[in-house]
Image 1 (cartoon, one colour):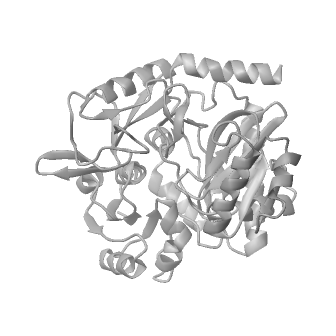
Image 2: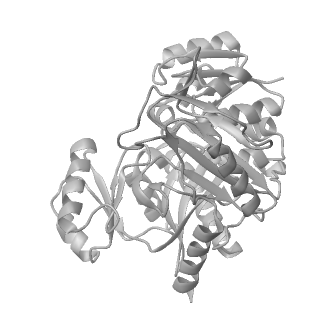
Image 3: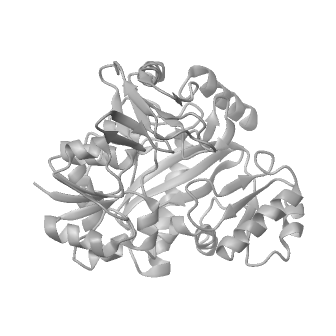
Length: 435
């Protein structure tokens, strides 16, 4: 029985821990707060700062971990994997130098350009504001401004959605320059976004089912960007607006990026390569990479993983993915997040919530909630994710929505995630784009 250190304490880590345990592992969690779900399934639980690597190492030594799984982006970018490797504990997560794939937007754009990998937009990296306005005009006012570092999914602003004109684009670019010393400005793609996450052992990649996430807070894709209000995947592992060719284009980009990372750094990327892609009239383009599982996307894929997850993790670590057949059930999934009223700008917190009659078969994953003697109490971020699994998207969506309705308290959720009406709008848009 493998002993695994799981770093992190959100819903993402809850489903990772659940899947590890189902695959025969003993889970020992190191998190910055006590997640009710992880508390229940962990053999040991240590609360500590995710940047306190000395504390993390002490816990890892004490439990004699066989390997680690680092969930969140911040500790990966800060070097948690490097710190654990100093104890000869390997991780399903990349070392700091190749984790720049996520922690530096400019590094990734430059890498893709240098190695001639398709998918990049027209872009420039700026280290001062000289030339910013001219480039925004060159892009015809259809642009994206990206903060270079980790921003919790909220550092990207798009013309027409968040920025109304070139003056606002210049102002936000200056904010990014002040914060990080550089900013990426690129052309705006028109199409439908999708996520394609891959297990990667540094050489080989194994793709998971395609997923579409919903960042906006409210129904109809309105409101501010969030960490993700919900996501869905279809039973055929495509999405209704994608073709097999789209998936193959995205897979090829990821495979070539993994190869380029090694050529550039001499370090193999071992972990989860999460490609954010967009299907356009002219094929698939790359939006960005993450160096870990997405939240909520991980909750669409791990519950339907049929291959032993410990075996997958060890294949990633030992560079042996090519010899392992990784399979997912032919099921549709819909994940919906319940969040505090006022989220994301002014969320209520400290308020009690209750779960009354969650439908059988729905998966429940805890995120920013505290378990107190009085019951579950809201924090200031996404609270609980519910995942419906069914033979069809309609069946999965109905289950997830019913579970969200079972939560009593000052919360809301996006009712349109995974619905036929919203998905048809995506399909119609792509039909229009591609003729």
